Image 1 (cartoon, rainbow, N blue to C red):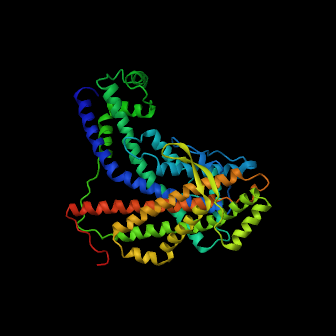
Image 2 (image 1 turned 60 degrees about the horizontal axis):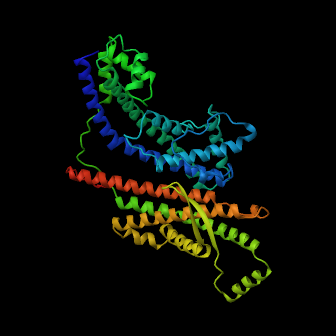
Image 3 (image 1 turned 180 degrees about the vertical axis):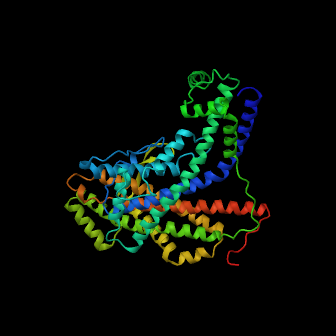
Length: 467
């Protein structure tokens, strides 16, 4: 194919890709982000249960890991002598990669490409959540399936429900994500071929249209562009073979976006309930904060008692007898500023921090079981979302400082008392899960609110689902 016929197809393909890009950006990428958030939240729930039941070990270097690009963790067979160590590292790495994907990756049309789509597919399929059985041929899938069986032993009904719901969500989310990624992959494949047509093969004769010549011309005309043999073979067949016209028509048909007729009515959404669900979810972090508080007090006692001599012991005893304020204890902790990628040092007045933490724990607990929830129910959506966003930020700030304190206690405890220091990584994972799920509900509220506003602008009035 050459001349006007090629130009005509190139123009049609360009128009089809523009429409496809608009549809993917406005519809499918929104669904992809939601599905990935649910995917990660569900895995985080399972991961936290594995840690709490001590089925895997904590990764001491997890917080120090810096990720600049998605990488699929090791999927090779385990060295049986180091099985626990390897599985713990792999699942920790997997959780970190999913966190990076959901919270920091640019899931946009102009950022994603064929290579990045492949990386996301690799992460989603790293464990076969659709067919997760102990007899799986995948070492990772088999190992996690065994963890799931072990994690159900001797637990309460709530934990069993969390495991079941998490596995169900992971399976559903896998199917949703893979379907959307296939659509994105098709878009990038055809975009790649269009770029090659416009830059290299336009007006190229049939005799010159070979992979070798095209690759050579791409090297000079499209420096830095990867050469995909499979896609170049497709291009040659579409543009130069006797079946080319039929193949080109099939491409345009596959890219065509189906027109959706607006529905006349749609059940009304109770937006306030979405926000109140978010309030209860972030309120659930109170349990983890309460457990962390107990451990931190014990760790502080171990560290400080090691430092003080007999006279300090007497002074503390007098303070307790006279109900005097405890002596200030200030720790210099360090954490990574994720926005700048640099370590930051912060002085933490331990007793003041614990007081603030206890106050926040009581507030969060009242969202779940106390009168605050009833009070919030009577507020406007604007007031509720303000409470939700503020408390998500507060819990995130506590999470950051608590992680730094955990590292401080572990690294500063003398070797002879280090085994007495209690780690809080499982509880921190629970807090993070609450943050992720609360943010997800906040995003869901914003997305559905925007959709509702668009429908109203189109003159479509939602109906009450109970009528």
